[in-house]
Amino acid sequence: MKDLVRNEVYKLEPYKPITFNWDLKMDANESPFDVPDEIKEEIWDEVKKNSFARYYDPTSELLREALALYTNLNKDQIMVGNGADEILSIILFTFAGTGREVIFPTPTFPIYETFTIISGAKPVKIPLIKPQKDNRVWELDYEKIRGSFTKDIPQVLILCYPNNPTGNYFDENKILELIEEFNGIVVIDEAYFEFGGKSFIPYLSKYDNLIIVRTFSKAFCLAGIRVGYLATSKPIIDELYKTKPPYNVNLFSQTAAKVLLKHTRFMNEVSHKLADNREYLYNELNSIDALTPYPSEGNFILTRFKYGREEVYNGLRAKRISIRKLFDEALTDCLRISVGSREEIDRLIYEMKKILEGLKN
Image 1: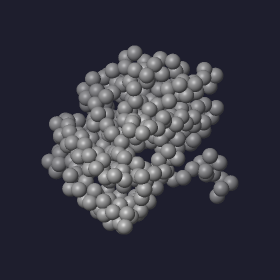
Image 2 (image 1 turned 30 degrees about the horizontal axis):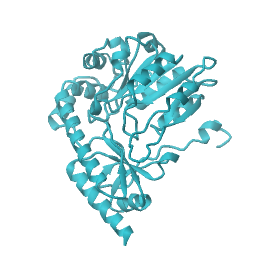
Image 3 (image 1 turned 180 degrees about the vertical axis):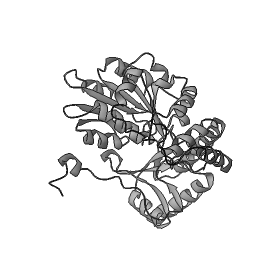
Image 4 (image 1 turned 30 degrees about the vertical axis):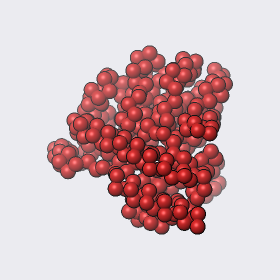
């Protein structure tokens, strides 16, 4: 089989989701709060009006109209996909490729590197500047990013805002300077926009090389439905439609997202509740001597361990509690914890303290 697979693909490791039977799932930055039954019924009532035997709208017309109102953009500036992952793949299959480069910081969302390699492009990874001593903010190395720019090779620059897994926003003005100087496509991944509220969408009218990517998987509580979207200039949209699969977003997904956009009050309540729980989780983690949590604008908290990372991770698994182990070389002593309900956080902290206390004795 090795001889049949592209060499760069053969070297990749497949994504390994948590598969054990968990009681608490705090590893994938999903919402702990489900969509209310009355909204589910509204979705189903809408779905039933349509034929299951026919392909559904290939351009997601009604959903794009709803998103245009939500983002204050024109619907022709919006494309919808099967989650932000598919959106990112469409972007890179359009603008990356053999002989091209994709620049992104590390640590960040690992799918950027995966799709870069699959596209045939070269990943250009710029390590973040690690926090020193009491400083808990990860910074972009702006000079190294700037130094990687070239006009000789077509390039794409991807930034996660706020960054997953570090949780922080990077300096907006410095990013704007990078956009001004960059000759290629700039992708800002705003998967966690609703938790922090900062966005580059207002700059779309100024920069025709800018693409914003968002998802319904986090604050809208639709991770199981798989809907993402991008916002950009019309000329970029026209090129992206050449690589977008036809009929990629199904009837149920389009309908669910469209209905949820009528219930932004529910989404706002979830966002505020998770922001409160994020602060609670941060303070609980910060009270444990062995841990250094990093401030976050997402629905997760990156936590550094002075000792016991493996013991805590494995001990929690034994208790059927799932959190994320990270493999970036800068994070070998870190775990990422998704923000849960208060009850889930209390259980997690109780079990973590027990494990760490046991390591002292």
